[in-house]
Amino acid sequence: MASWETNRPELYDVVTGFFPETSPKETWATNPRPLLVCGVAQDPETKTYFCRIAYGTSKSVRSTHGSDLVIANVSILNSLNLKKPTKFVIHSGLQMVILPWLEEFFQPWTGYDTPVLSRLPEDMQRFVGNELSLLQDLPQF
Image 1 (cartoon, rainbow, N blue to C red):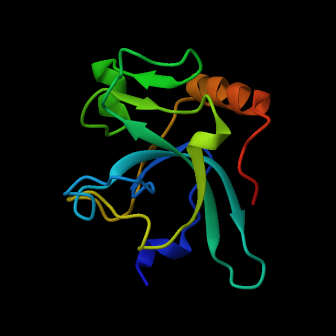
Image 2 (cartoon, one colour):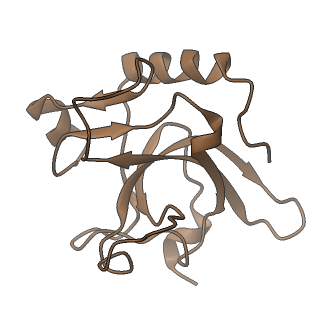
């Protein structure tokens, strides 16, 4: 068990991990992608944390759904520890998954001790919270 697995991720944390993909990249296992925590729950019996996750992508940042969160400002990218402009897909619960907060699904980037990179600033938290509240298809814990 990784030491970070016992530290609960928080709502609106930007983390690094492996979003399930039908065609994962060749570097999937060694290059986790940025993910956005859109919900957290804990199994009362096993004490394992589970996260509702929206995936981040650096592809198609310019072509986006109106309610996706796009981060492209250099100073904000730096403050969030993101390497390049990133779009978090939050316009549809069907594009999100529930994953256990385990090493199998989350890995730190090189140079980090934990998968948690940062937490969204408050204005972005409000935006994401509002968008999530409008969704009827969020995956449930």
